[in-house]
Length: 246
Image (cartoon, rainbow, N blue to C red; front, side, top):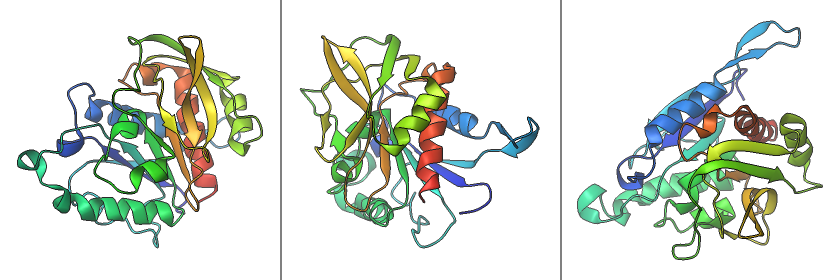
């Protein structure tokens, strides 16, 4: 890992862009949060915590993503459901190499943070749901209207839990959507939930896929989510934990 870790944010574009999410805007806000100056332990600013590259999703977007090098330290997936009709942005075969490179990165144990609509993205990938450790299911998953929302830390016993509790005091509030009725793999470890219809719904989890280091974070519908200090703390803590084990 480089002294200032390099984060690649994959932003929804083309096939993985939808009319409900401004991927360019939220990806830019993610970059702003992660490049904010850090302290060096003496309350003096010591430069950015991370260097961040934002790149749109296109078939060759991951051609240089090599799990055997340190050119990239963390991949953030901020893509949408999109549209997969071949006449719009190529057929499945044209995108097969993109998905294979993403799978190879994840299966090599290189860190992945997937946010919000990433749970409803890459429907044409044979590996993405396994890597993610869950998925949005059309006709089942939903969210109530966007509003000021509360998300509560759970997942006692996982090493990330203590770090999140210290960073957020156990609660995250943000103007955001509350994703509900997502499918979560039994092997995944749920860390944060939200309440809808009297039910606790998982919104942040660590994938339990063998050999994979991936966190899914359902927050981040639009830039207003990232205006929340506790949401920013959630994001930074997830990134730091993923990189600490890289």
